[in-house]
Image (cartoon, rainbow, N blue to C red):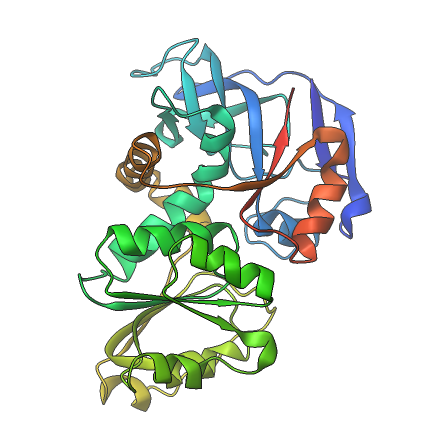
Length: 326
């Protein structure tokens, strides 16, 4: 089979297509003939050696995929050969075949195509987990979504509305991305390229601030997040795209009843994989019924994986990027 490997740590040029043996599923696993794999910013970080649990080169990158089960390991129930699934594989997703733990493979409903399922996996489950389990969003609350035109951001805007948010605010880095954020549910969009965002959030909320903030940026944004976080608000940190970490003065937390919370999809997959099923099934249902959309802005064959990574790394995406195995 063909697979993309990170031959050494570095830029997009380190991605190479190689021939590898087709993997065999072990007990509790299924083998999937991959239709499409999602490209996530975590894949870019892994290519540089900056993503937790990433292997040493050479390794196959990719967190999620969708395809058809073509072999079932011992002890697997509820999944059968020929079944369409969305999955988080044991190894990388950038390959024609992949093995996934059955606990991390979810049947794709009729009416949802496999490319959409591949695009949904990481961003949909992450956004739903952030808003429901971590931030515990309540009806009527204000939600601030950073990187609102990206994969998680685009889905989080929509889910916040579906879950009853009273106001949804998104931050973006360009006018084009601002239009995208509005299209997918943002009531207020802040273009941070023209300056900071905290004052604009406070102005949009009559000085209250946001009840829930979803932040995968980190770095300098952290202090501004705290500045515009409402009393009893929850700041959820689920990444550090800026490459730096923020600092918190605990006195700012207890006196205002505010919380700073962390979430990692990778850690959850590793230590509590069974906890993701309800979220995965819910977002698949929302897509199947047309309430949730996952826009795909680019489709690339395996041979153009470096190009897909370049677009992702340059923040040139509006929605999701896929590798397709046509």
